[in-house]
Amino acid sequence: MNEIFAWVFGVIAAVFPGFGVAPEPAYNGYVEADYVYVAPAGSGRIETLDVREGDVVIAGQLLFALEADQQQATVRAADARRAVAEASWLNLTTGSRAEEIDVIRASLAQAMVEFELAQSTLDRTQKLNLTGNASQAKVDADKATLARADAQIAQLKAQLAVAELPARSEQVVAAEANLHAARADADRARLGLADRRVVAPTQGIVERVYFRAGEVAATGLPVVAILPPGQLKARFYVPETTRAQFQVGDIMRLECDGCIPGLTAVISRMTSDPQYTPPIIYSRDERSRLVFMAEAVLDENSTLLPGQPITLRVTP
Image (cartoon, rainbow, N blue to C red):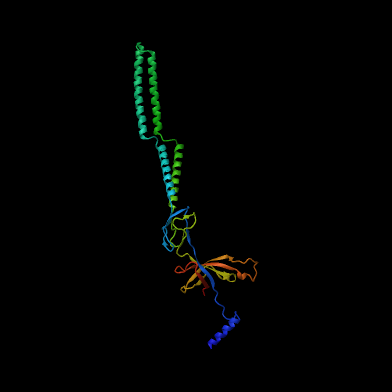
């Protein structure tokens, strides 16, 4: 008897589609992943590729390295310019070297001895001139010698004072600024060299490797794609007629071919713009063609894969 009733209801349902219990609404979609795309900061030929697709990486692990001969030369040149700037700044802030000052002091001592000798000679000549034993020309010559010795002493004292003093403040400021610029250039050169070795910014699974060793990678073009943990989401579409029934935070039942029962997903996003909008004027008959995209966060223990088709249903 039950079989007869089932057959009768089946015939009626085939003739009258609206007869009987309405099927539970289902919303189809697929699994999508939020990848981390790792790209070099500068272009260059890939020297080594240290990961393969499917590898598990941790944050800070080396992914690939670019050729760095030019950057290494830049670092050496920047270090040389920094050393020159440091030497110039130290020379201006400390004055002359101790050896140079010692030479000036020795010359000053010799000049003072020569001055005393010239003074003694002039005194003797003047006494002889009074007795008529020395000419006035000799006296004038000895006076000139004494004057030269005195001038030499004054000159050497001035040189010693200059040698013991640091440079003028303007020169020191300029040298210090040049030193800071040279140090900044050296730091920038080292950063450029460090950028040739690209490490993983996060842990995860290497999903795709877009280049091989020996190929040239462009600036900002991804070389490796990493899938971090917990970055899978369900993307599905709901019709315009039921859009108002969904809210962020709603829990959906998730089904797929081969999936274990009991999977759920939590709606995390509902778009406000319709998808696949037909290029016609809206009408009551055509509004049913509008769908809205929604996204839902998957369970962390799910074994779903990116691109896998899924079906979501409203939890009772």
